Every structure is written in C-alpha cells, then in structure tokens.
Length: 115
Image 1 (cartoon, helix red, strand yellow):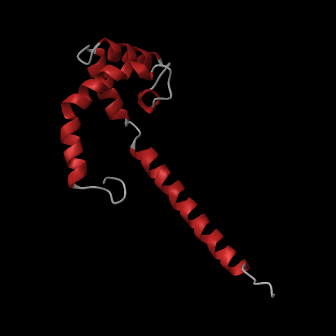
Image 2 (cartoon, rainbow, N blue to C red):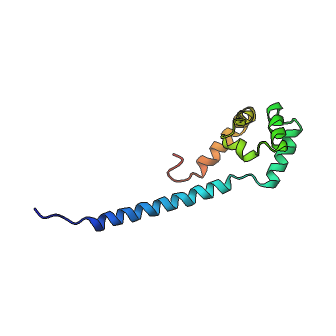
C-alpha cells in the first residue's frame, strides 16, 4: 500500500487555523476597546456615584476610584475584589432595563449568538 502525502492538506488546515486565531484576536481586541470606560464616562459615573444617588455601594466604589486604589474598568470587569460593590446597582438595572435590552437584542441579533 502506497503512502499518501497529506502534507499539503495539513498545511492548508494549519493556515486556516492561524487565520481564525488571528480573527479571534482582532475581535477580542475590538471588544476590549469597546468596553473601556472613557474619561468623560468615568467622570460622570464618579459624580453620580459620589452623590449617593446610586446607593451606598456605588458611593463606596466611587471613593475607591477617587482615591486611586481602583478604576471603573477594573470594577466592571469583575476581576477586582471590590467588583461586588456594583452588584446592587447592576441587579436593579437588570430588573429595570433587562426586558428592553433583551427585546432589542432579539430584534437585531448577531448571527450565531442570539437564537
């Protein structure tokens, strides 16, 4: 039985894989950049949170941000030990706006993401 040379096939598969990995990295970078809090947004959020209007936890979070030991992106990422301070306002907003957001996503879904 003769050996079949599949090196060309493997090279093609490897090239496709590298291309997909590159696309994934670009998309990850795009999403990461889109989720960065702008300086203006951070300032507005800090002012609103400091006022106490968003609750005591957000006021505490704003104090940490103002003191330089935290930043809003770290808090919102969930990677900070202080991210739990955002849970009450997030839960309130999910209850208040969740249905509206869900309807918008379903109305204009991203193929393969929203079924």
